[in-house]
Length: 120
Image (cartoon, rainbow, N blue to C red; front, side, top):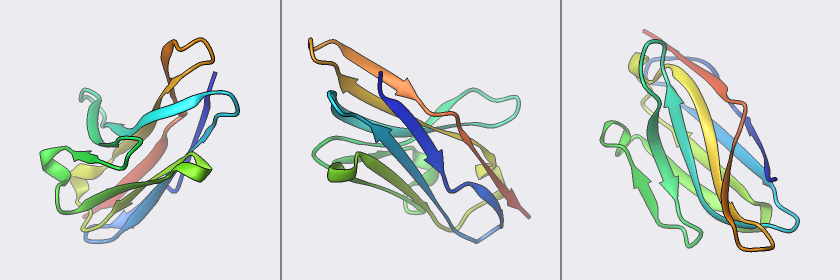
């Protein structure tokens, strides 16, 4: 199974920036899409942004123009640059990694989550 570790969360004032990292351990697996999800208290988990193996990004409408997702395939790492943060961006952010194992099963793994808090 691919292990996923997130980092980079924290407390920031509205209008500030944070950069999240998602590192996937993948010695015998092939990594496909990588994505960031978030869950705020009392709300459903939602997709924030995802990126294909080829680098094509996809964003939730609420973060377009403010967040940028990127990845380094050599490091099996995805990044989420978050600018112009708003209090409503406060949530636990989770990284999801889709991959194939040596017998070509499509699987996915989640990280443990990292807290992002934006103060007004």
